[in-house]
Image (cartoon, rainbow, N blue to C red; front, side, top):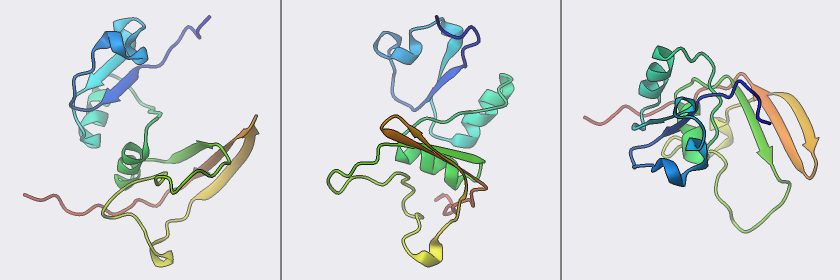
Amino acid sequence: TPYPHQPLRVALGRRNLPRERYAMFQGPPEQSLHLRTHDIAEALAELRARGVVDVLVEGGPTLIGAFLAAGIADRLQCYTAPAVLGAGLPGVHNDPQHPTTMADLRRLHPRGLTALGPDVLFIATALTPIPTPPRKA
């Protein structure tokens, strides 16, 4: 039985997302929302207007990087499998501003490390925002 107070599930992106093809849309329509934008500030303003005060972001390296770059992430929870496979992709992607040298390093304050079966949960806070380049006109 699902928890009775399910969170609002929000997808960001301009592509059409047919409700019947995505699991996040399978519940009642009022429990899911598709915001047709890539602008984090615009998305958060829309959610704020709907009364949303807490946001849990689940996404890939580009989405997570956008929230970090905007300086609006106050807690980072990373679920990972301690395994190595190939060259891989970065866990957080924020070109062209991602730090590449120790001088550019942005520290996190570790708050917890928990083994979850074969996986690991790392929790950190007090993220230093990654500066974003000015928008091109």
